[in-house]
Length: 243
Ligand SMILES: [Zn+2]
Image (tube, rainbow, N blue to C red):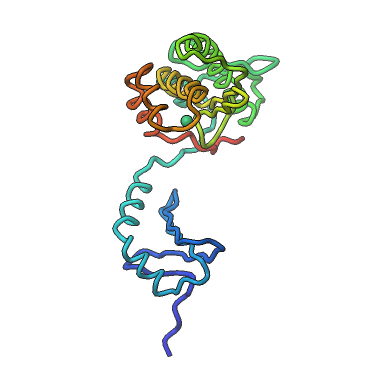
């Protein structure tokens, strides 16, 4: 007898689809970064031949997603050493590391981003200093933007914070009128930060992403679509630099 195929894998003309049985109602197919692994989640009661038919029908989509994912730039490790390029407000600045006593300091000097730390400071210390600096930069820029857009949009923001987030550029809780922004925005062009600020503030008028919300954005920021697309074109920096 030939060996039985692994029930947890469907071989699809060169593509392996891993099958995961879950308590769920419908089939779900995902192609995962960074290597394009394919996972098909399915309820227990769906027969294997149905899974094969489902995956076969999606073969072109799977290949398209795999090609797209494999073309994405892989995150490279960051060492926080002199000469490295680091993005600041949409420009690439060159890192310089200076020897200095006391608390780590970061300063932007033209196109140079200078970290001053004791010579013995490790990578994690330099990483933290830079992360704190991005957060301070974003915070410094967001305050005046909110102040300027409050009268324009006719809203008031109760409180806002800047944090490092891995999945979102910003968020808004309309009930409490609190906003949160991603510190990573200080790496992108200032116009993109402004878009995120306006987007989250517009949620104080309209909580959902419906036609009214989009019309509001268009009224106040006619090029918001282009800014949104530019922001979304590059994902949030992955945390390879968690120290
Ligand atoms: Zn939104």
